[in-house]
Length: 193
Image (cartoon, rainbow, N blue to C red):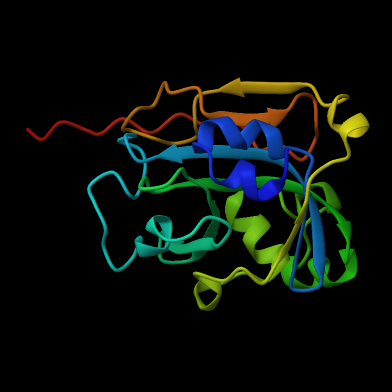
């Protein structure tokens, strides 16, 4: 299947199929090892409550990056992916730097190589992605060759840190890969009183 066809499917269908793909941006290439899917009918998605100025890229054409700023300090990137008429995206959670490692090290400071793109904010930082890249399609995404992809053991489970739809098994990762981030459930809200 062609990448363009994959990107026009629901995110939870596409995400496991692009594990192992190589994403190149800003002089660095990562092999994607962990992804999370977010669909239109998903309470965990930024697009769930409708189109806003912040999430409008998720409603646009597939194949662009939806970049957002979180916790007042981190950028995270999603690959826009959805069928006609439905917003959606795939959070780029982790990867292994396979090219441009010196530049990734420069951007990430004293991180160990295995941690350069381990987690969504670290991955965005290693690739040099910030809010200025929101809506861009100026990256390369090369699917893993069929033989290589067939060797990938795909694991699935709940997404990291979500309070809404926390048990949805739409986190996909390469089983046993050291660059995959640790699973952390959402912190429970304290009751007022």
